[in-house]
Each structure stands twice: as C-alpha cells, then as structure tokens.
Amino acid sequence: MLIDRHCHLEGSLDPAWVRAESVRRGLTLPAPLGSLWRGEAVAFDAFIEAFLFGSKLLDSEGAIRAAVGAATRRTKAAGAAGFDLWMSPAFLVTHLKQLSLDAFWRGVESGFADAAREGVHACAVVDAVNHFGPVHGHAVLDLVERDLPPFVAGFSTGGLEQVPFREWAPVFDRARKAGLRIAAHAGENGPGSNVREAVLEGGVERIVHGIRADDATLALLAERGIPVDVCPSSNAALAADVTPHPLPRMLRAGVRCALGTDDPGLISCDLADERAKAAAMVLTEAELTKLDAFGAADAWCLAPRTEAS
Ligand SMILES: [Zn+2]
Image (cartoon, rainbow, N blue to C red; front, side, top):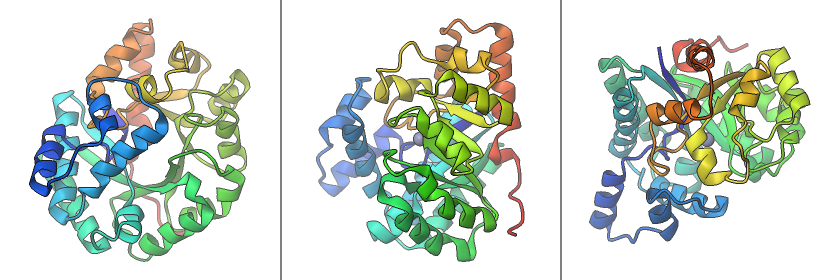
C-alpha cells in the first residue's frame, strides 16, 4: 500500500482552483507562485509568499474541503491509498482570522469523508510555525486541544528552523499529553544538527526532511527507529544546495525513510513522481520496496490516535 507520508493542506491546492479563485477575487498571483508552477527553484522566503497566498484563499469550510479534495485526487491518481496531511488551523483562524475553528474542522472532516468514500485514508497533523516560537506553539494548542477531532493524529513544527528544539520541548510535552504524536520539520532549511536536537532535546518521534543530517545523526535515527519523511521534488526546489540527494545514504544507514509530496499544488508532483525520482537515485528494487513498506508501516493515517494521558 502506497502512502503519501507528508503533504500540506495549504500546499495541496489545485492550481486551476487557485487561478479561478484569484480571478473571482480580483487578486494578482504572486511572482514566486508562477516560478514554482514553472518548476523553478526559489528561495525559502519566496516559497513562503506563495504558500501564504494559497492559505489566504482557505477562508471557508468549502475551500478547506476543496483543498482536501485536491490532495485526495492527486493521491488516487498516483495509485496511492492515503496521506498524512499537515495543516495550520491556528494560522488561518487566529492569525489571519479568516474562518472559525468549527468551519475549519468541518471542512477537513467532510474532505476526509469524501476521501474515505474513495477508499483513501487520511489524517491531520497540526502544524505550528517554528520561527514564531513556543509562545505561538502553546497558542496553537490553546486553540485546538480542548476539542480535538479524532482524525487529528499529531502535532508538528514547520516554517523556518530558527528556534532551538529544546525551547519547543515543553510544547511538545503538552501536545503529547493531549494524545498527539510529535513530528518536526528539521534539517531542511536549518542545519543537520537540528535533526539531532529535535530527537534528543525535543523528544520528536518523526522527522520531516532531515536531509542535512550527518552520518552520526543518521545512525541515531536508525538506532531509534525514527521515521523520516523525504520529499525529493520539494527538496530540489527549496533545498537545491543539498546535492546529491541523500536518500540512498539515509536508507543505507538504516533510516526508516518514506516518500512525501510536501506541497504538490505549488511544486508540481505526485507520489508517482517522487517514486520515479527515488528510483533515479539508483536505488535497488529492494530499497524501493523498503521505502514503500516504511511508508505504510509508519503512516499515521493508518494508525489510530492514542488516548490522552
Ligand atoms: Zn512540509
């Protein structure tokens, strides 16, 4: 069973939908969005601008449902059976104040129900912004933890890796007590040492990207069985300096790597493209099979949430 192990709600929007909504609202598409759609690499802050533009269109239950629908269609078209979907309710509800939390969750719930009718598994991972810091992290939990829908599996940090993970540890502890599993974007736009720190000082149980990790850190990830979501198309666009791509090295170090699309509405790809990119890194058939197996074995969309402690 193939699972897209890492994609973002806000980064999954169908480009045709974004174009139509922009015309309807009289908005001009930001230049970085056009660059990304043309397959060009952009700086991380330019990517954030494009990501934010899509986020601002997610201002109703229907828009949220449409975004989940785009992820479902892309997943099915690639022959995959599910996806772990990162999303930032606090950014849309508290920061941009563009819809209520109720409307947000209703949109996700109906989108996931649509996916289930198509035989596609899905779960939500609530994403907090690393560079906004732990105060923001607590605010995210203030917003969501009282009435967590059952389809929310985890809590994660994303954005710019600027605040040390040891400072995030109390937020992660609180999320864990609420029954959530903990992931972090680390070793993507920040140094590889962030990956080690996320695990050892943040207690993070799953890493997104991790592509800048050194050999000692890969050994740590392997020893602890920490899953790592690897997104080759996204890395080519946003971490183009990391070359050659370390996926073969990571797998051969024994790390439980799996493939994800990250922001396939911005950086055009689907899981089939990611598998083709992985194959082009001269992985053996056995290694490709292992990637797929880890993809399903460690997927949160296939595992129910643990009870809050
Ligand atoms: Zn991501």
